[in-house]
Length: 363
Image 1: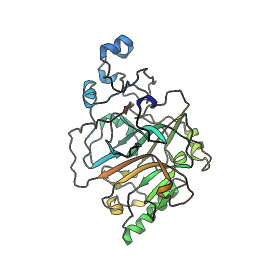
Image 2: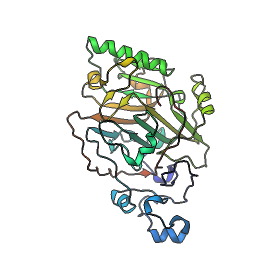
Image 3: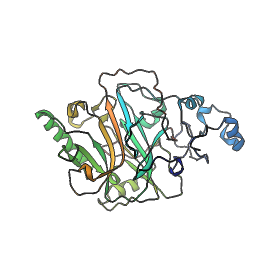
Image 4: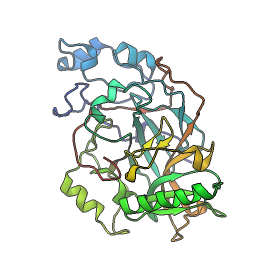
């Protein structure tokens, strides 16, 4: 297996912390030394006086943030406390869980034999106050969450790349929930093409997945050697390029070693904090996700599938990443901020959002 190595990670560019998300973006030539402390303000000013104008530090460019103490020194608000939702990553080669949080001020790095990258989960819910740090990302949008990933392939994938969700064990559905599940599957299949799903058979988990290239809300491919766009705002893609990409015939797309792939997937139909399917067409009421898989977690996954079986057998999957979302229905929201988990590697995040086109399934 390949342990995470700071030297072979494609860095997410550092960007302005200005509220105006349409301003020009620049990148800093500051590298993560893999262990050295964040440079002091005076050191930054000596190397580039333009980094420190006479403005609050929270409105200036910053280098990589690793700890809550550094975040506090830069006057950045910590992420909200969502006690009902626990998020962890099983994306590294060693298979060990790494805890992260929603609406993080930094992106979580991961690396395995197939893919190395960073991920960010941005969400909201009418059941809790809106996080002002990402308020502009939801302004005028119906999206309930936005899952963003950026990274590179370490070897050429041998099958088609899928993005979707799965649960770890077979579903125990009653007569009503079975019928309701089929209705929801029908709705989902009409909103995006290429959908695959399975109820959980021998050798395969219950899942629903779409081809990544066609289903991603946004996709940006950065040539090798060029800086990729920042996370934390909309991935740049023109409506014309998005339309062409989503109409690409399955199997005709090409994921290669070298470029950096930045992509996002959002939905207006799933409230992760409340653990509900919401805003359904036809006036259908909100649906509790516990009704479908009880207390099991939801695994948000992206994988290379090396077979042609519609049930997507586990033995034929090679994961780019796997994020586990666990919901606690008895948890009570608190306005107290939660500490940011200290992780082996963190990437930079861009604040704000830019307007753009979205799918009917998304927003």
